Length: 181
Image (cartoon, rainbow, N blue to C red; front, side):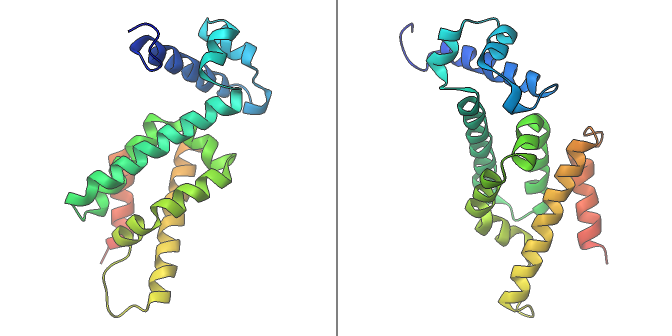
């Protein structure tokens, strides 16, 4: 319906603007991308851009939040299984789908990354740390940090190396390294 804030056409225009920003980020640092650059790439006028976003940073912020919400959804939907492999493969697939946004979060927006990790800490903790009475709480915290930072490091390297491996392959690597007898 025309005039409705989140109608299909408005959603497509917003996606077009975000895709243009992602495309531009392949060649430029986000700080050197202007609204004019985005408008030219998206083939829209400035008024259309400003109907959806305040500025380039606001556009990126919306993409970060949408990506984080997808991650939170994966974590919520994973309650039916305790499988670390299922959880990690879903996360790796999300990273592959949104690799430019994740690259920005991992390299440029450390505050946003810290917020995501803090928000998801309990779910990750429950998944990544075995329910083992022989480990003290302190040891479990160290194991969690070690594992989580390893996964984040894997994602960083995967993005830097052009994501040649599949999410399933990364999951098998993790599983092999962590659960090898």
